[in-house]
Length: 252
Ligand SMILES: Nc1nc2c(c(=O)[nH]1)N[C@H]1C(S)=C(S)[C@@H](COP(=O)(O)O)O[C@H]1N2
Ligand SMILES: [Mo]
Image 1 (cartoon, helix red, strand yellow):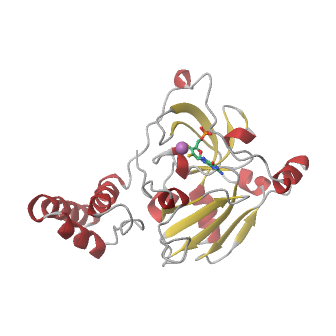
Image 2: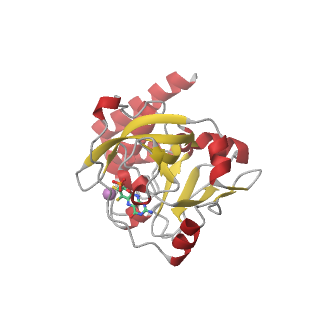
């Protein structure tokens, strides 16, 4: 089967199973095609699996909405963050020259990238919305490089299925699947609205995942690990938000 007809086939199967025989069948079908989110066994049941499975099949190549320059929010709202740690303030005092993003796990060439290294990758700008699960949002221009550039240099191994990532002080951590990691809008961001990324917005480096809710866009990004599964990461639900009862897959 071609990729498209296979996709249609599985999507129809999932929808039919959900409609006719209940969500449990859809759940089994999704499992067969590797479409089960890591938090499906937790507070979320087959419904959550169906959302992720159908979204994945229908929207693998879709793009988050991009806005025009005139729609950029005059006063973007920075969510509260923990006070900067001693480690952060030391790096800040050195103008973040020693900031490092490590990429390890299922890659051929583990990397430790400085901001200078990240800035040497092709520059990409996009005007997208940050949407918090608490109900507010704002539009800003984000400037950086697609995460795929860095992952291609690190060289994903064939078993790579998820990218787990966290902040300097590990105040939060998240993971996305390889489709989202390689998506052209998933950006290693170091500037916003034409200035260096301000600290309250995650400077000096933040992952922007505009196809998902704000909590996937982790600020103060320092660590990325490529894995084949999430069972041994934290409680096995795939992210700090999922451990707090939110959905691991937070598509918008
Ligand atoms: N390191 C870190 N990243 C984070 C958070 C955080 O507390 N720490 N909050 C997340 C949440 S819940 C949201 S909604 C967005 C908010 O982004 P903003 O401050 O740019 O509005 O950042 C996300 N990234
Ligand atoms: Mo949020």
